[in-house]
Image 1 (cartoon, rainbow, N blue to C red):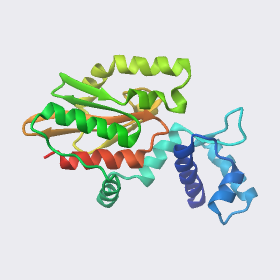
Image 2: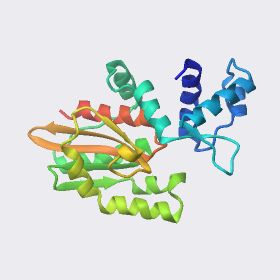
Image 3: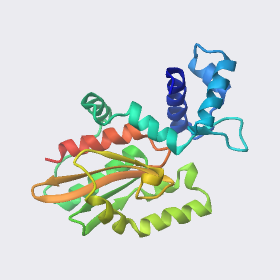
Image 4: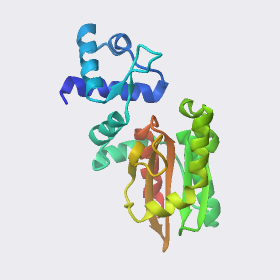
Length: 231
């Protein structure tokens, strides 16, 4: 992808994550003071659409990112392999977790804090048999999930969450991993940031689940911050 297209796609993804509103070429030029003419931006958006990175809803003049766009964004702009990025993201989280004598209480409180910070749903599983999740209301309040059909899809995910977690555990690493759309065990309409850990002989995993439009940068930082402090 050409540099100019990459720049435009990055802006579109970040703006759509924030607003959930289709992005028009006019908005790109005016709001972000791009050094390109409106005609040039429109031409580049056509190319991005032809290549499957954005699409245009029938009811809007703007465009929205596709699953392919989010995957490109994560792989090229949010490299979890870059320690400097992870450290910066974690530092920005401004999240504080404090160990408690009661481990179950600690996990539940940390999960609640994580759900509040991310504004999404959070699950936490320990040794495959102790499962806790919170923030479901956060998930259902997302614009993508307000239709009855999508609520049904989310309900099915919640019903199957234990099987999903057991099925994905062995394939996880001790570094946060991002799953998007069709590659996401929680469902093609979702995104997730997940990690497994071992603490004092106890094995577990936790993560954040949201719409495909979720803020992967923020969630990656939050999950990594907690992982680093589970000692």
